[in-house]
Length: 334
Image 1 (tube, one colour):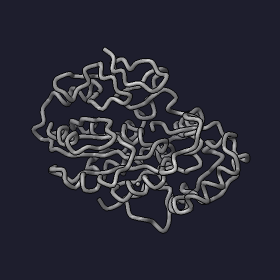
Image 2 (cartoon, rainbow, N blue to C red):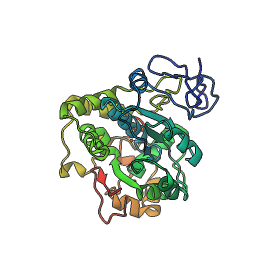
Image 3 (cartoon, rainbow, N blue to C red):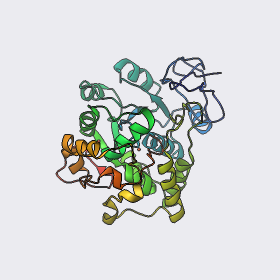
């Protein structure tokens, strides 16, 4: 059975171990969807077992993972998914772009927690999310990353810089966010980010439980020639530089976050590379000074001074305006 959810140049997306398509209604992938990004339901075996146990204590709730591309959003998506799974709460997860009222209502009618992964912004989204008839208000989670790294990651994958509306769309999503996660914290302090996410979800875990979930996330790997519709990981999703950095963090241990950690160590991040010219870096600072200042990415560093083998997030890791930035996850009022 083939999902056929392909990236250009990829082969097929076989429903292999770890990808379950129950096929019990129109929301389940029938194995031949033919979509570039399959927007039907795919569950891992543990999620499928939870789903089969019924919904007596589950209320319809919408979680939106709306981080921009190459900012850690796929890690965020899988983190939310695994937190729900480890809390034994049935969660139906989907890709959906654009968000559409009828499709959201149909998924929420299942009386499950519904997790949606999306990227692009639309001005209708605030009213759309406010109009949904759910027991609890929708929660939006977003991610942010140094634009120099975003640019390098785009060039590694697609051979060009990020889109001109990348920042403006991010800034709109962050107005709706209940939690804004820094890419650097995902890599360096995954357990602490998971604690922040669990708190936002109203879930309680021990430190050891969160550490185990973080370890599970770090072990997720993209297929070599297919798209995994459970994790939303695709070939070459993770750059070699980020893989090395993750390995280094795993070796030294995942310590708690401190204010001192908020300073970016560009050499340690090792994600710029020779494809970025001085002009590209200068252009980023000239075009997006507010973004770089808000998130404290405002230390200009010429690209040739950096050793770059173009990294990207583990899995593909926005609230009110800020006058000061923080490397920490930023918690906002929902």
